[in-house]
Length: 197
Image (cartoon, rainbow, N blue to C red; front, side, top):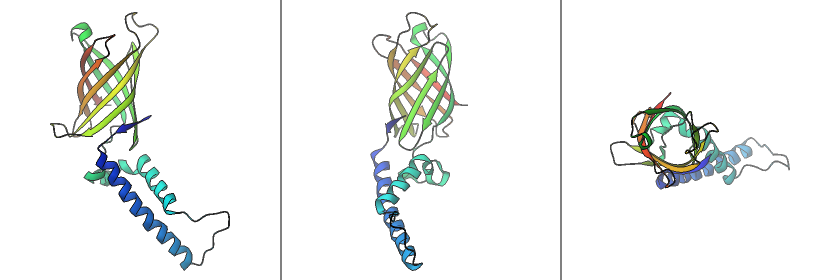
């Protein structure tokens, strides 16, 4: 998995909120220890603000960002597109005459993502991504760069190549559609539609 770009305000808001929560939790934890006259062993250091901040950041990245009521808070909202998707691809290689079926798997945390896709002839995986809010018809768009590896039994003209996909994400997070293009060695472009499986 690799990091992906989001709106800068989302991460800034999260950092600010996590710092405030960490200060509050560290204060209440220390106060509770004093109130109940609990003395920790010499080898156990009382969690500091930095310790609570790290815990909050980790919990948010792995779990909390997916919770429904947190997703409704617009200033920390990151759409959850993780899961298994079926894809249909139409390419300029054959004049858009046929659809190629594919399976895509998106693994995502609040700050990291991996987009993998497999067809009968090749496998690809993302190397760089951006998931950004837009003012267009779709609320969010996903753009990612990928590297494609042909399978051993694919046609000889299919070589390892780089490409870029730009997808509009449906408001219900069940459909993504857009365009892709490959580097100058392949010079292909086309349409791609993802439907959540």
